[in-house]
Structure formats: C-alpha cells, structure tokens
Image (cartoon, rainbow, N blue to C red; front, side, top):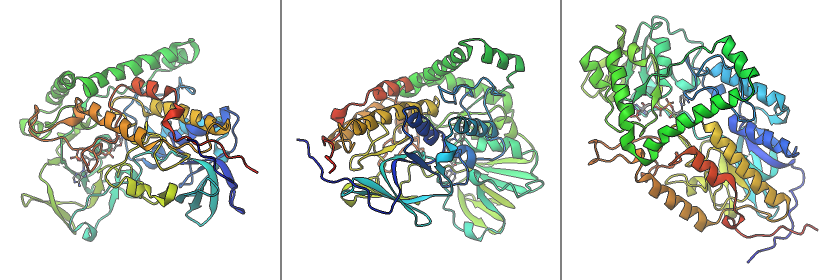
Length: 510
Ligand code: NAP
C-alpha cells in the first residue's frame, strides 16, 4: 500500500541541492557528467581535498600506475587515443580525469576542501542534511556517495611503532619531501602498491627490507610505450579505438571464467607466474619464500615486470617472519631477528568500506550505517541500502572487480542511479529506498555464488591455508567483489525495477 507523505520543504536557511555527490574521483565526475547530459544542473560535488582525482590524486608513490590497460581504464564516452603507455601512470590518468572534468565544465560545480562529516536523513523535509567539516550545512534531495572503498589508509598495529625514531608513512601518503637515497628502508606489505614502488626505490636506497605476510601471485605486465604512429592511427581510423578497447575488455573478462566459475582454470596463470619467477630468480630459497599458498586470484593478481628481479638485488632482503615489535631504529621479527631501518613505509592497503571513517551517515529513524554495517557492508546491486532513502553509492559493496576495469562498473552504476532519479523526477516515487527483503535476498544469492569461486579457498581444498584478504568481512563473507563477469553486472543493472523499492507515491506539495 502506497503511503503519501505530507510536506517536503527544505529547512530554511540552508542551500538546497538536488543531488549532492560526495567525492570528485572517477565515480563522482562520471555521475556529474551524466546528470549534466540529462539537463540536470542541480548538483554539487563535495570534495574533501583541494583538487579532484580521488585515488589518482592521493596515490603519488614512485611507479604508481594502473594495472588495467589504459584504453580500458577510461570512460566509454571519453575514450583517449593518446595514452602514452599500455599501462598509464598516475600523472597521466590524473591529467586525463582533469581534462574530462574541465571539458564538461564539472570543476566549477565542485566544492573543494569541503569534507562532509555528517549525512542525516530528515524525515519531515524528506531531505538529506549534510554538515561539512567547517560547520556549513546543506540539504539535498539525493545523495550519491562516490568516495570509493579504498581511501582510508590502513596501518598495521605493531607494538612499539609509536616510539620509532625515523619517518613512518603510508604508500598513499608518500613523503616526497624525504630523500630516501642511501637510507635503510623497511616496507611492510607486498600488495598491489608495494610491487609498483619497490622496484622504483630499490636502486636508490641504501638497503631495502621487505616484510611479506603472504606472497602474491605475480604476472608480467608487459608495459610498453605506445608509438606516435599507433596513437595517430587510434585517433584517425574510425572504430579502431573502440575495437582495441573491446579486445582488451573481453580478454580481461576471460579471466573471470577462472575466478568466478572454474578456479581450476587459474592453473594456467599459476604456471605462467611460476615460470616467470624461475626466469627472474635463480636462488631457490628466495623463490620458495615467494611461492603463494592459495589459488591465484583469491587476492588481487599483481602485474609487474620488475618486482621479482628487484627482489634479487644485493641491497634487497625479503623477510617472511611475522613482525613482533618495532624498536626506535629497527623492526624485530618473531624469530628474534632484528632488522635495522631509518624509514618505515606501510604498503598495507586500506580500510575498505569504512562508513565510520570521518562521516556519520544516519538514515530513516536515525539508524546509523556504521551500525548496520558493523559485521560487514551490504547493499543492493552495490548501489542502494535499505533504510537510506535517496542515498546511492558508486563502487559500493560487491561491485569491485579483480579482473577488469572499475570504470566499467561505475558507468553501469551511474546508469542505474539515473533511472532511479527519473522515478523521483516523474513523480513515480518520492523516496527511492530498496526493500529490506529484496536486499536480503540479493545478498543471499550473491554469497551463494561465491561458493564456487576462487575467493572461497579453505583448508581441505587444494591448499592447506585459507585465503584471507580485504575482500572478506568479519563474518567471512566476500563483500567487496562482484562474483562474476562484469558484463553480468552490466546486465543486472541495465534496468532498475521499481518493484525492488518501497512503494511510496510522490508528495502533493502545497
Ligand atoms: P593490498 O594489495 O591490500 O596489500 C597490502 C599488503 O600489506 C599485503 O601484502 C598484506 O598482506 C600486507 N599487510 C597488511 N596488513 C599487514 C600487517 N598488519 N602486517 C604485515 N603485512 C600486512 O594493499 P595496496 O597495495 O595498497 O592495494 C590495495 C588495493 O588498491 C588493491 O587491492 C587494488 O584494488 C588497489 N590498487 C590498485 C592498483 C592498480 O593498479 N589498479 C594499484 C595499487 C592498488 P596480506 O596479503 O597477508 O594481507
């Protein structure tokens, strides 16, 4: 039975926005462009930093690049024939994003240095009330959170770390003011960021000790320069750029067949990685230390042409013992080994989907998203959350990928959100809020799909240790990834079904 709410006026004295977008990275900019294309100028992007770019602004560590091919890691509606490399570097991706934002005149609708601290649903005005860090307040009919899952750096909780006398920083907050030349540097972690910067700093530092908890699967990236002739052809030959992108897209999709449907298929990649390691590393003891103990794909497969070779350099040491404590000028491992260091770099990833990180989100009836997600994040199609009307997420739970471009997923989500917004505009719904039962059923179905995937490694399977990763929440549920082909996600989100949402007809405003 449809309910008919009463008045829906914004509280007086607060700027009232149609769509408040949080975050000016790939997702936020995409949302803004699509709103503009539909003739909707009533949006504003709130960005915590002084410039746009999201993860591509924050991560500036040496060697920072995308491990998805350049022509695929871009908007379908803003394809770029000018990428200089097959895997674009951070500055080039950031420049691309800035160029696109400027072309669509999005930058002027961004409130920079405006971190939003609270987003609270106000039932009487049927609006979201946003409070910025400096106390400014806004109201919005709709909030689109485009903050992404990976923006809060995670630091290891190591005894004695606070008493360390040298500089300590996270890879996402690189200290460019520090000269690492000749220094004894400790890197904690061997994940996606570490394998990119370790080969860059190793030749410069005096000594490098890499503390590894789980060895990653590594494949060659085959990064190369794209010639001027090729770029000209991509720009001038009709359809070539799109064709090249499609080839890369479907090639990446093939990997999902192994990840999500038949993990045995990952055996081919594992053999390739093993051969690569044998070629690059002669020392059998070092090779052994770098042998992963889980099926390829359970953690992100890392692409690097020079990580293995770097680990063989005379000034580089790989430590696989657990860290016991940090002393003022060293790190001590479980075997009692003491490793001297001047600088510690955390390459330990991010606190994924941390709704409590700096932002209070209160939905209908005052419920807190941090409470609702205490045991792990959950959403419907990675976009909507029951109890949070007119609140949408981009790159929300279970919409990450381990095999293809996240930009593809973002575009699918933006298309989906645009359909939901049309229900509001046309008066079919006043509040778009996914039904509890629909969200629950959806997530049960998703988790069932994970059963047969590579992300459900357990003791008793081919490997003796369970595979743990940031993809998995406190309940052991994979809440980060989409368990299938990305084209499957595209099909799922192609048409938003109003029946999935709580019935509520538009208000008859006096
Ligand atoms: P990550 O891949 O999650 O790697 C974190 C590393 O730190 C892992 O080796 C982890 O070991 C280790 N670690 C974490 N906590 C530790 C602790 N307390 N003690 C010892 N070791 C610890 O993090 P990241 O490299 O920052 O990348 C995060 C995500 O960002 C990636 O998964 C990817 O989605 C994205 N990323 C993408 C690109 C790209 O090119 N597209 C580049 C960089 C990052 P365990 O494996 O044992 O947990």
